[in-house]
Length: 301
Image (cartoon, rainbow, N blue to C red):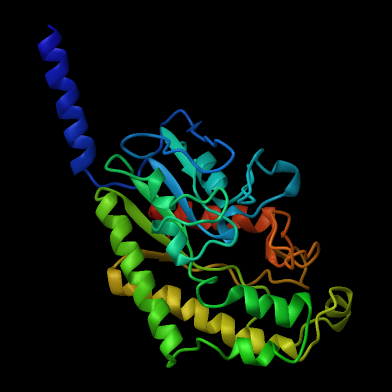
């Protein structure tokens, strides 16, 4: 009898590894989250069924729901948690970390509480969402010099790493290599590459009063728009090159519009700390992104 049960379990495990599917619902919504206060502990030997990877655009949510002992500024209502609530996976781990670069997804880092994000994945992982690339492309410098403490260097950093430059080509190649490595460690997983919610509309005039309240010079908006277009092109091209699902962000709810999906208030990026929620997705924005990803996964696109 024991041998029969063991043989059955082996067949189940083999089927789980060999079957690639993003339909991971009907689970218990068991969110496995562990921390020793310094680094993240690999949650499951075979990887969580759904794993959220990326930077602050994945980990951002509401400050009141920030997870305890978390220096990555994860929130219980960030993108990964929103999608886990929708899909109800058997297990879920949130590896996204504010300030993460592409290196941080796969390479050990000296940053506090920032072990490689791939530690959360494995052969039993069925779904991985990735929101990454912005920090490797210079997000921090652009945001700081164009919006946080605006100065004359905004144009310099906004024009760095644009398409056609060596920097942009390097980040593109690095992004491709990173996703290939992720796929190697989670061969049965559906990898979804998620675009970045835009801070401002791609064209048109932004409400001057809104910009004044946020202390953002209007002349910096076109500079940011050019950089953001380069970022989204990067994400789209990488996903297309690898044949991965790409989910474009909604563009009809930028800052300074009614019901924005991004927040301008609370800018505190100079200390590079966990409370930097200004210039990041709002809770409403994360829910909207979660809806889009769920729709794509369930074939309602």
